[in-house]
Length: 79
Image 1: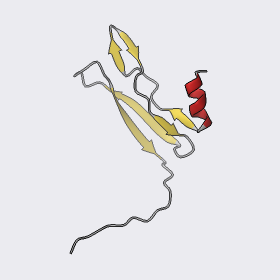
Image 2: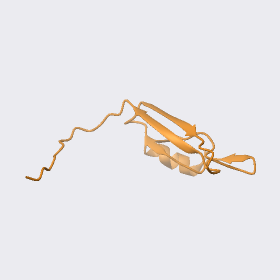
Image 3: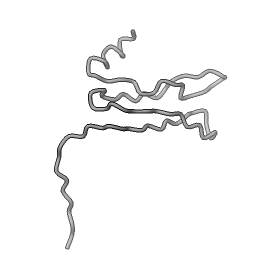
Image 4: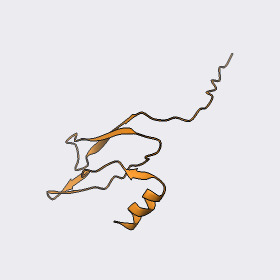
């Protein structure tokens, strides 16, 4: 296992993108890294979106089941 991946796993981080995000000379490489805390998320999905505008493939990240911390929201209104 790659040393960087081992370090990320120590902090409960998981690589979300598992597909090539750049196509060059008919070769696909993963150049985009999205690391997520797997203790906070239990239902995620990442899908490629190829717009055809460049050699770079975008990612669509969907978060489901996010365990948000309890916090108060303050709204400032000007009179």
